[in-house]
Length: 442
View 1 (cartoon, rainbow, N blue to C red):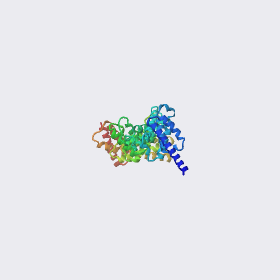
View 2 (view 1 turned 180 degrees about the vertical axis):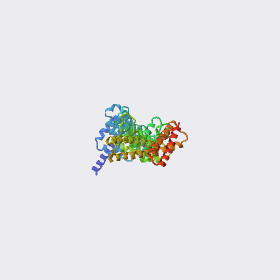
View 3 (view 1 turned 30 degrees about the vertical axis):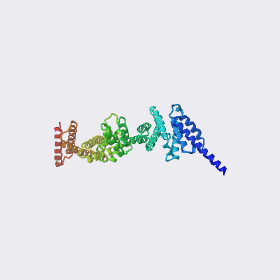
View 4 (view 1 turned 90 degrees about the vertical axis):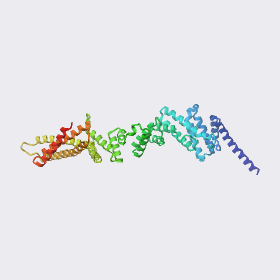
């Protein structure tokens, strides 16, 4: 019985001694003797009993975070911070209810950690060490989130840490990470000098990610908070072209816009224009792309769809008319070349070979088809020009050109209809109509 009493007494003294040791260290933290507290913690951690309690780790987190921010410890600051953070996470694991954090100075642990990570990250920001600074600000954000949740941080959001985390991620080419932090700020509708770029970033980011719902959301927020900014007045088409560098990338981006918004007139027209300007470039030395035939088919389909979806728009019809006129001109050159070849290969009084006749007839048919397709588009354009109350100078010139082409087309059709009086009269009437219109436009 006496032996048992003796053991219990010794155990009680041991527990009391351990508690006294925690209290002694805590007292040093109270009076900001952080270096001395760290020494005692290091000694204590060598003892399994000392290290078996959550209090050991909240003590370590507090002391290590404080000494990490001391310039005297700059050489080992990164390791001290890491050890402090690990100790704090271990404490949270060992005591989920965080009961000890109701006691000063333990509630200072996350604050000290936040301060040292923020200060170290800000130094990296000043030195443009993006990759090194990002993890520090990410921890600063995580710590401030914890403190806000536990009502240890007065503000509803740690704006500085979030913005710097976003900047570090953006400059370290971690777009998804940057968008995460910028998104939190934008969702809170933060505004003021310098914050407009956050909304611009999110608009660009979500457009490239093809997340049109988020694109529209942040574009609307930007326009609401910065109504004078021209940036937020740009539409999907502007971004589809403006954010891409190469011809192929611009085409792909515009096509994606049309997948999501098939009747988007601006995107449809611009897609056709980009292809047209590439296929019929007036730049010296310009070479058509290897997939010119595929692009040509795509362009024609795009202009046709644009004209059908927007029956009051003139430009798609003008482009289609010009395309078919250019096509006909190219075919005419082939006709002339073939005629010269036939003349050279055929003896006087003899008939051309069946093969050459077939080639000539095929070219003739293709020429007629393109001339007639140009006629259809130009007549629609002329109808729309005629309905407009007044025309600008460029519009008058376009209208005049359309009338001129239609006069030429009907002259060709009239000449080809020789031997068919009714057709000749019909085409002559149209020829006169368009030539008279051509002469009347001033």
